[in-house]
Length: 422
Image (cartoon, rainbow, N blue to C red; front, side, top):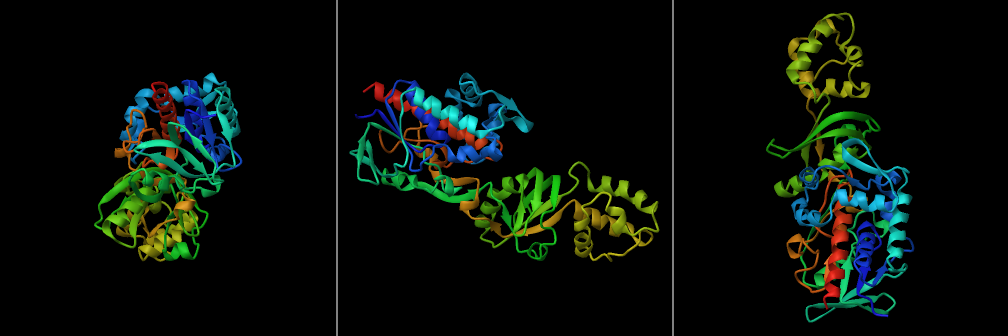
């Protein structure tokens, strides 16, 4: 039987597109090349699934630095609040955690995945797993359907491509959709990893001096080669055997990549502020009398009370201070230099882990070639895109899944409405 809408990809955007198209009266078939739907969704949020973020729309879009403004039209049709209601109407109760992140009360991503699959089935969608698509069929500026790897052809006047990017490839996101988009005349902007750990060749990284050391609530600032601040984020991080990881490092990653490319350099500097709530002068005024009260102690032992012990020898080395110096022999200038380093501990960063190791793909189908009110291609009638295949990327914290789910809903709704008018 001929369908109205073919959805390719069983991730969050594809499941939402299928549910939405079915809810709006279309006969839908959902194709996925894997044997299980929602694989990436099932591992999101540490297996708990950060369904969305409840921030106000302007603030939400600020947290989607990669073409987030494109989503204003999408969010005028279906937004994060609507997404919460969508799940709660299906019986999936959500709870708000720090920074507006919304999780299922069950604390299980399986609850979210199963509810979406159930909804897709309820609206009559035909689900076909283990059905990899070879190509999308076009003729005279109009979608015709798809051809599977088996040679079988399925026909429909609307095709929604929701196959994701190239990050986390073991979940099925291997970049299949870019060739189909290019065949329709679309531009694919350069792909790059985002929300990915940073790499460094610093000696203390290579010799693993700080490997496994976690820092809580620090500022991480990316500088360009001219010493100008590019971006600053606050949060937790961890030193690894290859560089820096943790939420704050991941948030800075796209800016590191863009800086290296823009200035055509092999490395750039990030600086860690261990005490973001206090100024250099404030720390100096606080620590100077404290040091003077413990003249017989070594400065190293004194600082163990306020600094990670493993960082102290490195800090001393960087400013040329004797590791065994006693407080009685510490000059005000030495203390000032130490505080300055603590407020801006530099790390030379030479890149990031590869795209396959990233949480999110940067780049993709150029958003200027997509109608933001419908998610339909401006190049090919009946062709729709949603989710991570688009050149839209945000920070971790529910922003990417919100973009994927909402663009999926709008694509499904629009495709169904387009078919109904024919």
